[in-house]
Image 1 (cartoon, one colour):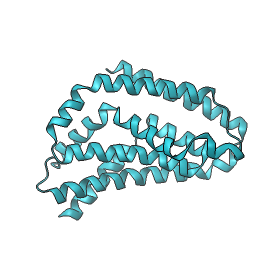
Image 2 (cartoon, rainbow, N blue to C red; image 1 turned 90 degrees about the horizontal axis):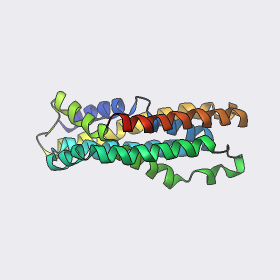
Image 3 (cartoon, rainbow, N blue to C red; image 1 turned 45 degrees about the horizontal axis):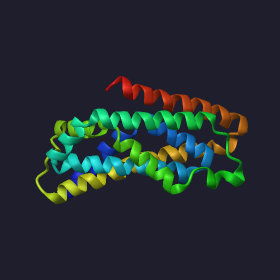
Length: 202
């Protein structure tokens, strides 16, 4: 029974993470600029937030989910401001030289920045609640099943970020400084646009 919920959670986690949004753009840009590990840790921050919101949905924590849904405007504003700031920062940033790459984005900041961004995205918790309810996975019969499902969400989400950072990492050796400047401009504009859009949908 627990194994069944683990696989279902993996499918849900993968499907939630896979659509390319601001976190995906950020992960791809960081992979190109700083390597696979920084890109992967950026994805792991998002995977951790997915697992946290998956736990809220799986364990039927109604009070917390209701609070988060009711605070979605404030969360959206905070997340939107951070996305706009991040977009501008990336847009004006200069490509890191090989000797400077480790200092360009620290591993811990890479993880916590995407954790914060994903937690401030109110659509994430709404998506989990809707998917779990639609699949009959909400309020599972016991804690083992719920825990297995949450673990599956984290594994599925992590698997996607591993594929994305690994795949983008193959092209890194072919990206020179000129291309990296273009990547910075495009990704900065996209992330800034996602930030503006988050205000639009409030």
